[in-house]
Length: 187
Length: 226
Image (cartoon, rainbow over all chains, first blue to last red; front, side):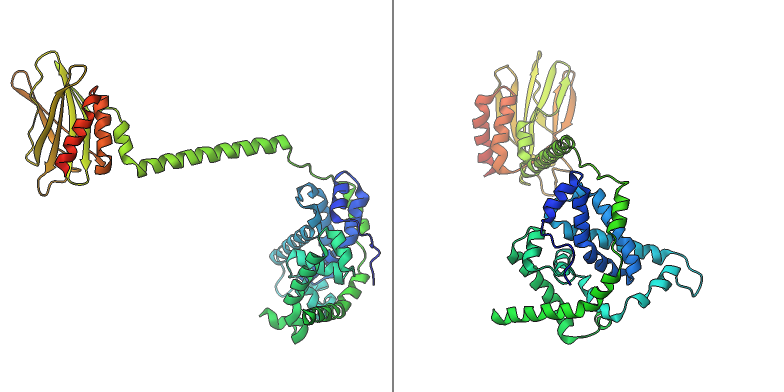
């Protein structure tokens, strides 16, 4: 299902406009990377509800620190870094939160595996890809963009995008072909 | 090549299929665009570091690196060329013996074999006959000459006796004073290689106003050291 965001305006252009105060340009970046970011956070937190909070937080952080982004065409990979950092910090906060004996913290109990099925194993695996590959794979398979659209959005040559996809597929291939549950690979 | 492309195309569709459940769930998650937009209304993009501050930081960094390199090179020079210090140094000990002033121009321990000492005397009264009074060394007198400003310059080679270590027991020189008194002083030899010895001797001769004697002195010492 193609995303409503079908513009191929490059990330670098949108970042440039956002830096000059154009909120609509940043909104387009949010639209482009919202689902990849949710997937990245969800793969760690195993809860869409918590992933939503973390992703919001990550976009606000990215906006505030937009001037620190040295390569605007790498906005996607940079955002994924922020999302992962934010999500891992949230995970640490949860684990350090005191609980009464035998009880999980409320949010973990409420948003645990119940909202994150085994069917999302591949999403978790993709969530562990390097940021650039993650951005490309999610734009391709979650945003359903073509390779040419990804190239235009990220400001990279089509060949580079293809190579990054190939590298990501090579990492995911053992899972795809053996069809082993991710839990086995984790040990 | 063709097989690889086929594999990748197969991977592409397999990933699509495998991600379908996650995609469906994602479709059901409410968009965050409105929330993000609302939250951004109250925040501003942090300003970048001003270029002037960056330039100042760069200059400080360059300066610090320059100082560090300078110090590093100076240290290397000292360790690689110890003789330069000897060759360029000011005269060593200056001893005031009333009417006579005694100056050690050079005292160098050469390749673990001998100590070369060059010293000068000047005074209004008769220059005392300075002799070695040390049983730890055998003295080989090399030169006794007069410098341009009328000082007596002496150069001698001291060969340590068996078991004598010049670093621990430097040669001792005795200078008789009027009234049958004697003053003794120890040379303070600096380590030097034979390769750099001639340069150090010429530098000492220059410093004692006897540059014309430098070559002759160096030749004499080299002859004895052979």
